[in-house]
Amino acid sequence: MTFETLGLHPQILQALTDAGYTIPTPVQQEAVPAAIAGRDLMVSSQTGSGKTAAFMLPALNKFANEPVEARPGKTPNQNAQAARSRGERPRFMPAQPRMLVLTPTRELALQVTTATDKYGIHMRRVKAASILGGMPYPKQMQLLARNPEILVATPGRLIDHMESGKIDFSKLEILVLDEADRMLDMGFVEDIELIVSRTPATRQTLLFSATLDGMVGNIARRITTDPLRIQIAGASARHENIEQRVHFVDDLLHKNRLLDHLLRDTAIEQAVVFTATKRDADSIADRLNIAGFAAAALHGDMHQGARNRTLDALRRGQLRVLVATDVAARGIDVPGITHVFNYDLPKFAEDYVHRIGRTGRAGRNGMAISLVNHAEGVHVKRIERLTKQTIPVDVIEGYEPKKTTSAARPRPGWKPGDGRGKPGKPGQRTFAKPGAPRKEGGHRGQRDGRSTESRRG
Ligand code: AMP
Image (cartoon, rainbow, N blue to C red; front, side, top):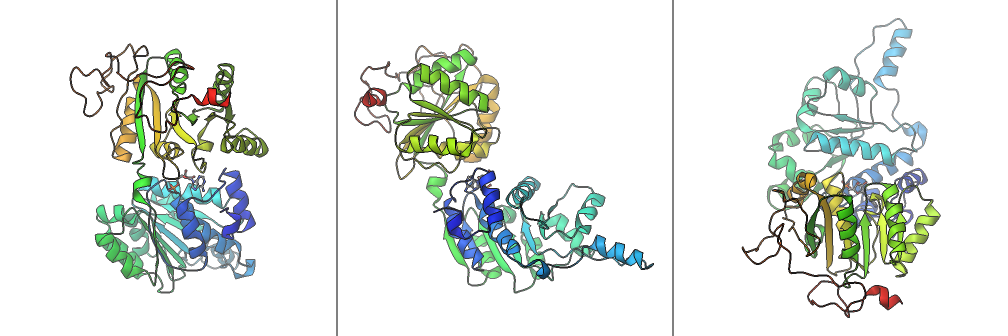
């Protein structure tokens, strides 16, 4: 399925191409056509599933397809100017948004607004504004005076503006509750009910939540009309089929040596190595090629044609190692990718989830290995908090880090003296030397003990 088949307006399709999206995520595939058809939705999907686009694309599509004259008239600013030009005192006009997205946190609201700007970049006259606690009131008044079509708000501050008559929801067409379960956990239930009660019954309601059980389900049923229920599999979103490891490294040299060593694991069918910069993607791909790996880079500076060719080569199995920036963190669906390496950790913990999701596709298992400087232990913790999983630390004989940091913990189940996962003590796990048959069984994704390199001949 492509974004074209979802029936989106060309201006939106162009924005998605600009953003590097190639295929809709599962939640988008299900939610976008239903929302375009006007259905209410109750969607259970995790953060990072692409849910923002799942609700924003249909809304933007609606706005993009309207004839210009059907769009609401003047902004409060324009009305005020017109009144002044008639020598009258401007009358206060509340903002009348057409779409409201409620989010539990400011950060999420800002993310949604940024995503909206990105998806709507080629559309004229669609404005999105965030109304957040902690933002100065005068700044928010300025935003509201532009009468944005789309408001993205946290409930508390929004109610302040509603109560002081700055916002009027009588023209609201689309209401989105994003991360509804978190909003309820944070005690926003009454606020939500109040806000919903001020919106027209004719609105379209789209509710997104990690779970639809319990109180969220009750609220969802109350505020939606004949909703389509969409459930995106939780287990695969949590990547339970992907084994994760962290290796601590002392410096770049150590990191490069370890990567080369790890890539010689005969269990690897295909791997993606994620780097923070385009330059590193290029230089590591070059280096790996010289070392005899069938490797190529993929990043945003490459022309679309070159990117497509690289991905085709990966799909056809001609490439064994793709060295990529986060442009490849999403949307690549190649079942042969048995391993993901984080040469650099991603800037945002959520991107880690996307990156490692490139392996373990199509019901298979996968392995995700992060090479982490000692100072980056805090980023690992952030990822662990997000995924609610502990990532075991691995150490390989001959590649032990010199430093022992508090972040380098023994892996769960580690017992004193078993030599596994403890910094400074060599791990029992060994990797095959290039060309040597693999000694250990049990590594996921292993096929026949021959290296992919030699298989390719
Ligand atoms: P969300 O779950 O909406 O927070 O999205 C998570 C991330 O996935 C964001 O960084 C989006 O930019 C990205 N994303 C959403 N949909 C797609 C897609 N179809 N292809 C690639 N990336 C996507």
